[in-house]
Image (cartoon, rainbow, N blue to C red):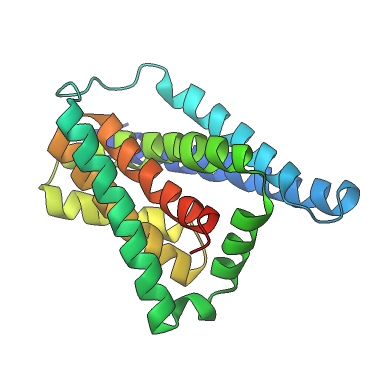
Length: 213
């Protein structure tokens, strides 16, 4: 096996693993919700969280070392950036009508409203961002960054991150968040910069929904 093939495998296997686990959880969640819970989202959220935990546990094994330690300043900058970007994007998508065009976006909003708050915080703010950032920034972006500059590496990882979301509007939103997470990781020199950015971006709509906005 030549070096190029080894690099491609190292680049893509976390994404393939993520897709297999999350798609399996999504199918199982829909089946269980429909068959036993009248379509409620609680079982789906539990299975989504379980899939995120499984993905994270696999990818935490022998993960690359971070360049720097996270400082409180870095945490505030990364978290504040993620939260602010999510609020701007949500308002922009609402004003332009993009959100209304997306069935996936509407389903996402319904799931946010219907699930218990504790489940939303645990799964949507902690577990899912942890798993996704381990795949798309800690592995994919980091691997790309070794071969190219920040801009191209961040753009490719963000595009792949958006593509796996399926729905075009959700994918565009995810791509923006993914690029910001890559910037946070590059800025802080630490994977947790990307995680905090993504976690705060996911917290923003939940918090604003809870406040009645």
